[in-house]
Image (cartoon, rainbow, N blue to C red; front, side, top):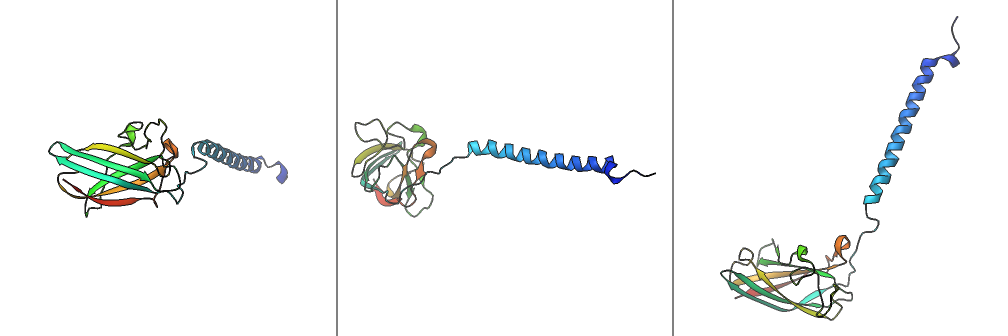
Length: 175
């Protein structure tokens, strides 16, 4: 005598195993999503369109030991600029070299901008700062024509937004 289909334990155990596999897969995917969503930033920093840094003074004096470079920056935009990337290249070259290192934040060599007499980064609209850098001879090998690229940034730390539209370029001569 054959057993009714309802009591076929082999078929029932296969269905239970498939259901358990689906439940485990869904549970793992929910756990991975919850874990990753903690590490992904919620909002991406953006740069307003009316951010612009100009130069008021560019001086360059080359020697065998390196180059003394002085640049004056003025905020010609509508928003406070917190940082600026300064890059230099020989005229006609597309590869530029960063001359103010981000790792030196808080110093006159870093890329954060400080108004004279202030300890908090930020250059307000219409304000001006003057910075001097000693650049190695590998970046500016000697007298000639060079291009300075200034790219403003807003924010601090991981929330630093680079302003692509506010990049300015200026040609200067190094003596």
